[in-house]
View 1 (cartoon, rainbow, N blue to C red):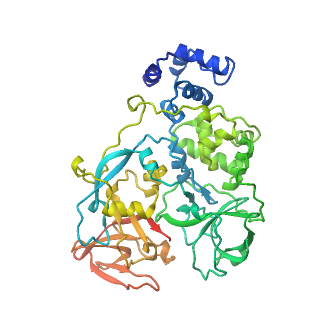
View 2 (cartoon, rainbow, N blue to C red):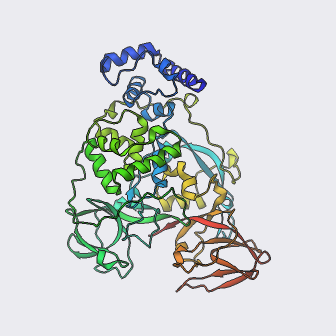
View 3 (cartoon, rainbow, N blue to C red):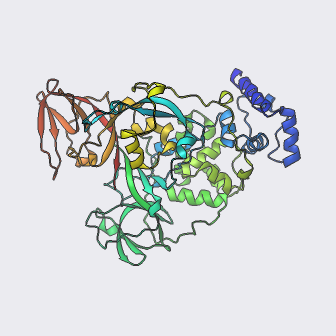
Length: 530
């Protein structure tokens, strides 16, 4: 009850910055939208907020945003709705089909941890903790970092049944797609197991595949593991190339929510809708659910995982309820259900509202002041030193090189670092630079930039005989202070580092605890593909 009363005081303080009272705001909402409109804000809103189960509707929150000219996402945050949960749970939920992630940065005024450069050391080590190069600096607003992005990249998550992507990518991998190469056709008529991967859109969803050029605008989805699954598509009619995959964030261990089983489907010859075709909410939900490969029963089971994860029963949706949503064009009454639909179907929050005919253009543009909204200043990055204000300069050296190489910062992932890293309480001290290792001990480390290391997993597991890329990787610290990374085992007190077939390096042994020791197990790999 106290928290809800605090929220009422918070709303009162926000309205006061605009010279408004709840009574005057309620009257304005009646004048603008009509007293019987869904957008009408009642004059007894404070009384309603005193009840734990009572929250404004999405219509009323838009009215608050419109009248105060404060942003819709800020007002949602005031009432306890963090839109970043959409991308976070889209990453946690197992997917049978490859899906495009919602990469929207909803709060451009959020504080993002930032860095300063340490004095350059020469020569730079090939593998080193991130703290060797960077220290913590004053956080930056997301809007300042988004301004540096060129907005030309898409992000997708590889599905467990994307046969064209596996085993080159891992199920659950996040891939970055360079959309500047949209509609770019492959120039070779044979891949020979080489060549770039493309993100291809078809009527049933998305796939990551190498392509073989057959003729003008005709390509073959290349699937060396299952040649019988190879399919011929005509670009523009059957499929659309969204871009070339140029980077991967690869989970090296399993750290996802419980599997939601869905029957696999055979890829049929699809027919694309025009990319700019407007669709109703019912059509968007139906089409999106089919693309992510969920039945109503599967979707309902997944919504149970969402509700349990967020500890709020309102995020659960029964199969019959989900079916009803696809029969109507009005958004759900509860904002929790809207968020659930976004997570389930891989839809952006604004995309769903626009499909509902929601007048987003009338939402406010200004941020609510920091002191009136739960937008806290982040603490310095744990595990990194803190730079003095005098030492912070424009990016140069290591940091400038990274920014130039990667072009864009995926800020939508900042609230999902624990999930991506597979570590509870992840900190940047768990990140190691491996980009200087030009002769790595493992194929997944070729062109890799960073790895995340779980320091609590320091005992190597026996080799299982699985494929090389499925064996666990470990970070090893040698007594001279240098690091190695690769597959390793313990053999009678010796730490054995294994090479890989056709690799340049063979097996090497160290006395465990004397010559070298295991620092931890690699949980995530960030690597460039082009």
